[in-house]
Amino acid sequence: MNLLATIAVALRALRVNALRSGLTMLGIVIGVGAVIAMVAVGAGAQDRVNQQIESLGANLLIVFNSSGRQVGARLGAGSRLSLTLEDARALQTEIDAVAFSAPTVRGSTQLIYGNLNWSTNTQGTTPEYFTVREWDVVEGRMFSTDDVRRSTKVAVIGKTVADNLFVDQTPIGETMRIKKVPFEVIGVLAPKGQNSFGQDQDDVVLIPITTARTRVLGTSARSRPDSVNVISVKAVSAARMKEAEEAVNELLRQRHRIGPGEEDDFTVRNLSEITDARAESQRILTLLLAAVASIALLVGGIGIMNIMLVSVTERTREIGLRMAVGARRRDILVQFLVEAVTLCLIGGIVGVIVGLGGAALVANLAGWPVLIEPLALVIAVAFSGAVGVFFGYYPARKAARLDPIDALRYE
Image (cartoon, rainbow, N blue to C red; front, side, top):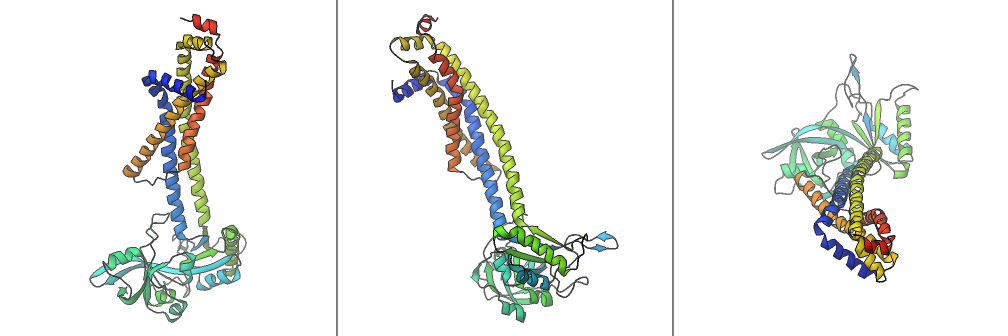
């Protein structure tokens, strides 16, 4: 008997006991469905995290001021104001592993245009900031080094600011007020969406750092005239991120005259490490869920083995009759093995459909991102087939080793 005929016989046998076959497949359906839904939700979450991290800029190090003290009380992160414009220049010019650095001063401000107003985060920085953050201007232009040198009153705004302050009109060339100081809008930033900390990156106004210090944000009593809040550093490549991070730490400690054993007055954050940490957490979660799904598949496989053993017992006379008319042991083995594999493959396909439906349901009800990987669908169905081979072999072998005479006499 050829393979196609064997498959036809197996399908006919499954169709005769359709309800039992369906209940037998239930474990496989649940297991495969859980795997597909889990992979889709996990891949979607990972893709969202990667997009948010990438939106901050590739090969990016962030240098913050550390916390200060006043009358014995810690004032919180960023309160020490030890970083300076010269620090930013030194990082870019003295470290080979650093491609660009951009100092930033920032503060919350009120914007006014016509009869509309909007409270947002205003940042004073240099043109290198656009390169470090890989942030394009979709309309107009970004400000230049000459704008920084001349302290011009020009602004580049994010999409959220444009939508709320310049409704249904282009903001380019319009004049808005930042803390009552008139600024010409010269550009609109490309949208970036939320970052990995849930902050709207498009709710921002960028102006030349010199203008920000002298006309908008000023300086606090505790700060130096050239102090900055943050320095964004772009390494020359991903492979040299660690080298750049170590060099930044060493150079800043030298410049700030921090002795051995003394606490840094700055903090360096490597965003790649954040990405790796999140990827590791996601991997552990995926392995945990895969273990749960594997248990469901294991239970489904045991159920199939049980049903196939029952089937061999019920069809013992049929097996004897087939052997009597010329069927070889290999034909009997293949027939029952094909039945087990067919049960698992059908269960796997139904499980894929159920898993896709579950993932879509999660996306709609919970609002979680899902990402369907075609390879995961193929692997899930192939794995369910492998479960059929593993758990169907013993019943098939038992059927093939029956003695034809004893099988014909079986009642």
